[in-house]
Length: 391
Image (cartoon, rainbow, N blue to C red; front, side, top):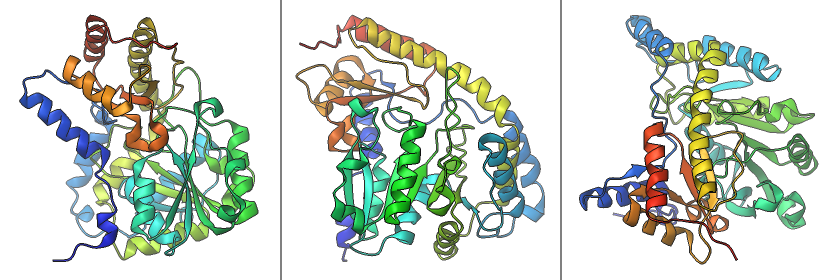
């Protein structure tokens, strides 16, 4: 049996590796506090579950759904974008449903890259971007996103020959793994860069509704010229605790959305209609649902940030996402620190190198864990004298 070279080039998925480390620790009798994967522990809100139950009992939802998503779901997405971002979308050709944004992002590389085409990607960044560039036969060009730049891409650092060869540029704000947010000036700069070089701008906006302290993330489509060059990927997973439901959407440039939809018609058969009906209810109730959840998450964020700062870190509280991105103690490598932390304290975090070479020197904490577990994690850090020392 032959395994293709493209599969051989794919590294192990970071969270599969983390699951193995977690299982090994548990087998040794370690009481693990899992601050790794960003999977919400809070249940899907009742109003959404009730909508699913009602819809699934209707036999009319049991057949194949439309490939691009039901019209009612696409209309709900367009209405939500208008209310949330003041962005006008035509539900007929500027919206396509996704089986979660991860699926849509993966298919985007097959849609917009021919073998040898360049994709400009952030480092550190969501591993799916680079892996799917390789699967499509494309060439990833990794741009370091550094703390001194607010973890935003320095577009000026991209060589002219790469600009000429590139067909896609991916950004993700609010950002996984760093928790960073983008300035309006940077988002407009990215759009202008795409227009100048005819590079499709792909925005991963999965965390737009996980935000704190009055900060309100923006859609790339709010910026001048974006509809001419940008496609945006969104998901109900993080906003509504629906990671297992697998529902999302891609919106924006008509040509790009329709091309992505063409790939999907030949690969999948769409989202169960009942889940789309529940998704409509989620979008219609986003203000009350997301507001309540974010109040709870902000308390969790503060437990971790304040706890680490008491131990010598000097972290600013992230304005969005589930994540705290922190430097490892001086003199340690990311992976060595995370393994040592797990073995000595039972606390599982993600090494920054899981998101790219430029993640070296950092680790990521997820706050998708009950408050009592977070308090327990901070207590363990103090008991084991895990401190940040620099200089």
